[in-house]
Image 1 (tube, one colour):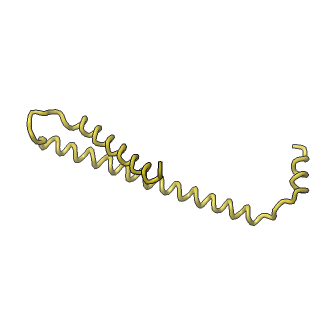
Image 2 (cartoon, one colour; image 1 turned 180 degrees about the vertical axis):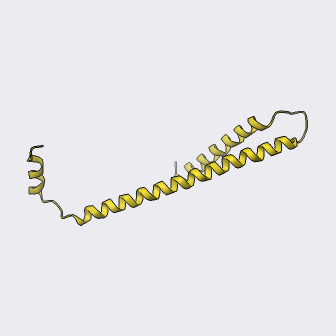
Image 3 (cartoon, one colour; image 1 turned 90 degrees about the horizontal axis):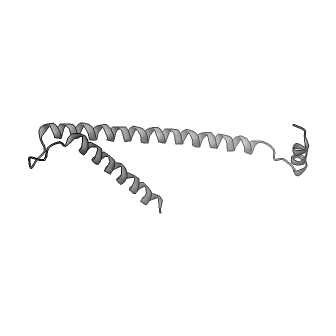
Length: 98
């Protein structure tokens, strides 16, 4: 499965969870052809809450990933500045008592 397919699938799963949750919370009568004003208000609040939550989660995830990437780059840079160990140094390091 490609990355785009996976992202789209996750989007659809999130969308379906929001629809399901908000429908069960807000729609309580099927006596009318249209939604009642109370139901419309509830649906609007419910969907706004979940959409805002998902946006905040995505932003937090992006920040954490950016920090991890910076840390990994700094570690790689620090390792590249150290002189490479020779095979002799590696053998000596392995033979040292702990």
